[in-house]
Image 1 (cartoon, rainbow, N blue to C red):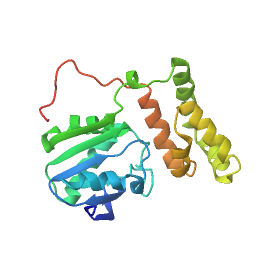
Image 2 (image 1 turned 90 degrees about the vertical axis):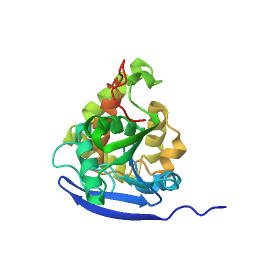
Image 3 (image 1 turned 45 degrees about the horizontal axis):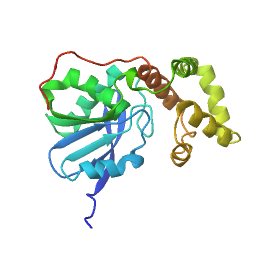
Length: 225
């Protein structure tokens, strides 16, 4: 049985965020753009798997985990410049790009801006269109309006008080599991209720974009494989 490549963790100061990242070394550079609110430790095995072939980098989105928030509200158009600054700091002019789930959309946004620096693109179950969602239109309406409401700092404060109390954990896990069609056990193992206000901002924005985006081209606009 082969031993997984060694993982190292670090922080790097970029122009608009202090980025928390991990690195697995074994070849040409690859940046994995994270899904909605991915925690580094939960994706170490994926980084190690890709690290068998690439020098793999994975980071926590600004405003989530140990990455500091942007000075302004999180929006997907800010991510490409963060990737560019990150690769500059790591000493790579060109690199490969990977995105999964909502990170697939962020990877495409990055490709639009940085295509001259990107060699190849890997998309793993990318969320790039509302047409891929299996929720009913009614359920999507409720989810969308819940997260619109969640953008209010006052609502965020109330919700965080409820989450921090731990009194309603099982009820909330059941509710989120039912509404979002998530596996309750996965939510529990990822401690999904222990989040910060900046993470709520990131989550509210990304869910709204997931429920409204339709990223498609009739012709192939990029030369990357």
